[in-house]
Image (cartoon, rainbow, N blue to C red):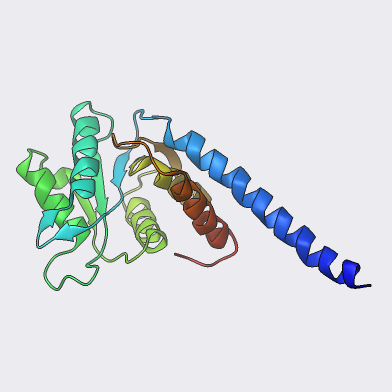
Length: 191
């Protein structure tokens, strides 16, 4: 009888691990693909900023978005990210300032400055996109991040394409971490 009591949870655990492994593999495959193509907007996911200056990760994302913008991939760049504990600056506003200093006209830069998580930033970005009748986006972030963001955008009716910033190889545990984040989002837990 004890064997049967353990069988149910063991099957669930094995199934959950198989699901996470499957999603992690999809995330890894997506992270290596650049799908950049003409779209309505280039969506840049936020990352840390330091007193008004982008962190190296955010700067690399912004540089990649700038490259795509200069190739005329999209007429707008939408920067995202809230304050993250910083009293004077947001990731989205730091992104706008950086892009402006690098020649992007202010009317071509849209900003989402409130999101404190990926889910919040994407939801707010979708709202901005709907207001401006923008229906497609090239997502710029780290490769491991793009799968989940694309799924969130597509769930809101946005055609989404990934374009990862150039970066060194990603540790495999990051794919598993994103698989967990994606799975939680699928059941309604936004992180």
